[in-house]
Length: 317
Image 1 (cartoon, rainbow, N blue to C red):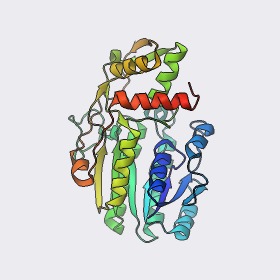
Image 2 (tube, helix red, strand yellow; image 1 turned 90 degrees about the vertical axis):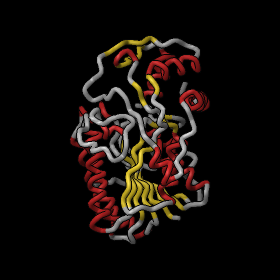
Image 3 (cartoon, rainbow, N blue to C red; image 1 turned 180 degrees about the vertical axis):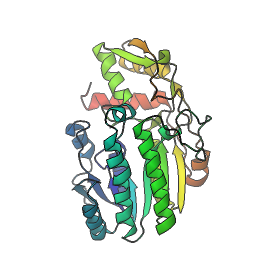
Image 4 (cartoon, one colour; image 1 turned 180 degrees about the horizontal axis):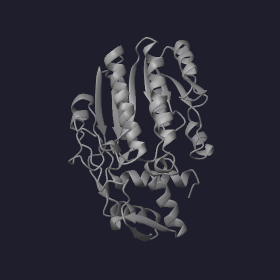
């Protein structure tokens, strides 16, 4: 299968590309090296991809619709794995407009290019943040998800709705995957596991909301990739799936696990929970389990051990 991956120099995109190449697929990687975080980390993500005979890398931007149409006409992919996006809830509060430009309009540009080129199946990465605080837990895919708390989840929910329009009008087979708190080797430097690891070792205080009693459904990268590959292999007219671990863990417990692995206690500062943060994220994965065969296996203790080992191997700590 020939797969066009957007965000191929990113955390999840690069690990998905590696998995697909390992099983014999052809991958066209696409990324714009947005400066939201340093290029050196994206170059690290690409290190085990560049040079592979089945991997083609193209630097480009989702906002350039004519270029996307040209690329799709040239490569005619069988499937699209759309992971490129402006991420991060708190950053979106400071820079809301770019989330509409990239996550909404950029996704529309991609879908429009796809519909003109052989109707490839489209697998689109979304976020569990779309559920906000008004959804009963555990979160199920049929919840309205119509009260997002920040521009980032709002842009992702808008993207989901636009994708439905393209699926309905142009018969573009589309699957939405809502990721929950992804972590592990190759994680982004702005994400909490990376930041907390560095802060604990540096003796810097960790800000924990609600005394650390907020719960997150931490989901290991390999489980996310396995779920994405399963979605690529099984097209649907239009479906939404949660990809989480389905086992929320308090941030205090998460930090305690890091402390044990690093051999150092954290200095914790209790801070009120901002309006952008839900008290819990919790994926009901029964639909993904039933229709995709998705089965998350890695719990936080094992996943963080692998993450810290990777950080040490890469001489990041």
